[in-house]
Image 1: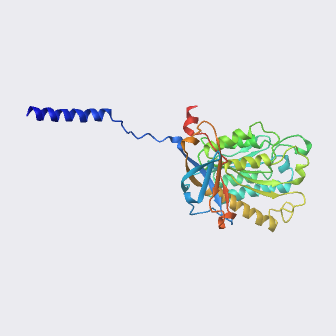
Image 2: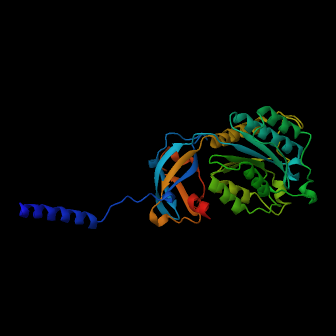
Image 3: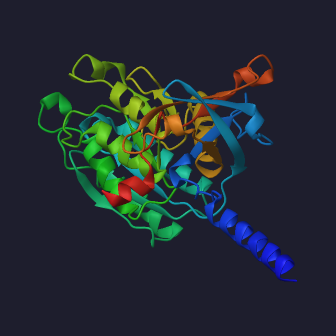
Length: 340
């Protein structure tokens, strides 16, 4: 019995020591920076938001390296919109263009009946504004008040004023504080900035980090390009960088915007163009997708943005005429930004 007892005791001791010495396999917590979600819009050939897309429909690269698309789903929940109206001399100095700007603002408000909307009017800086508590009737009254109260700026032709688009977009972004993924800024402007002190690149990155998109309806007057030392390329770059979309319409002196001067009846050709552009932009605001990316350890550069490329995989099918709008950079990891 002693021998048997000693044997079993030795076996128990050996098993105990083996358990103590064996390597312990503990699941490591998932690095939160390895799962990133971006806001994307996809428009089909008719400009409508594409539906029934899955992770298998996309290919993605971060800094030139293939990246896994883990999931694709429609965004749900509330989002807000700031409409930024350019009332500088190059816009309000042309009566028909100024009237068209207000028509565009009213049109977007009408197309977003359940979206909280704030409106700012700017020239060099923001001059008038509403907040998100303003109801639809109040918003329309505000827009109507602009008929008799344009911006205080003189025309750019007289070099007695300027346009601070990015300064004003910064103000629009601040009205969203705290900004939420899916919020958007809708700019109605000629896109010509000659006054801002805000860095366009820094503003782009702030919006990207928050999931806020910039969309624009840009009014192109060719005569201004010969008189101003700027163009709309920087504004278009900011729109594209945010994952937003832009529509453009020519409003030169030779373009008949309205049936008669001073009338609110649009030229049928202009009306059709505005209808098409406005439907497209409003649907892009209202129907984004959330795409979750899985980053390998090699791509976990947490402290700075990285170049992002996103494509539809089946470019040989009917999807080759579709448009995809996405942020051009993957923002620095939120957990890292929170620690800085």
